[in-house]
Image (cartoon, rainbow, N blue to C red; front, side, top):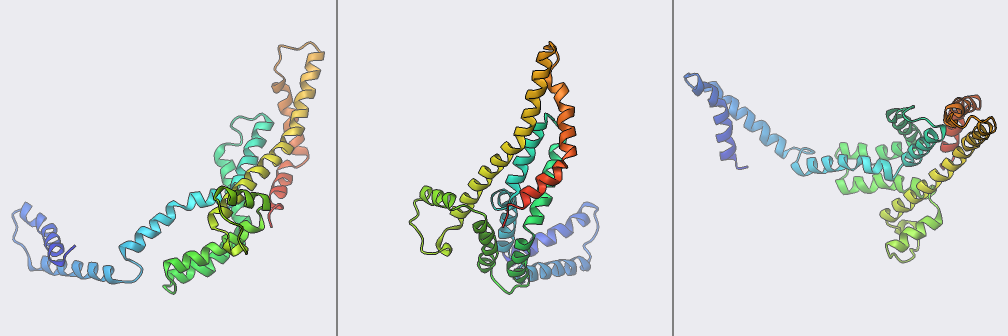
Length: 254
């Protein structure tokens, strides 16, 4: 916006109340317009407040949910918790909000060293104006790459590179971040289903035993789920299932 047009718009906005009420324009309005124009000019010329940096910041915020799903153990946690609720035979208890909150808190605990490194190497220097946006991205993505590489299987990494038609790299630094993220997600999905199967089998045995007992007693009209649900809940509470499950999930990360 040119300075002349900007001054005209500011003066018009300040003149609207005076014209509407039939009053004379006071000289103080022009001084206010000059002050606003000076402030806008200073903001446009200041560091860290350019429109380009604002667009980059907003775009980065929009990618946070995708990064949470693709580059953290959140996917593993929420899938296992959903399979656990289904194995217990519960429909809406615990509710989705509780499961998502628990998965998010566990994700923050597991990712705490990595996020601290990202903040120290990228966020704080960028906010202080010491590095550029590209340098901040390079410094921030490196701890995330190291975390994913420590928790990815070689077979998954080779599969993602075959999908992308990437030749075999000399070092891990030559592997693209997109291939590492894809391999990490494939591994997390596989591990989540493996853990879900291990969680599901004991409760499935309880359902089979209860159904066999009811069939032997001739109580075919009584749904087995009604009888097996209290026994499954009792079994899960007696073995301290939540602590066992959480520690098992968290201990699988390097």
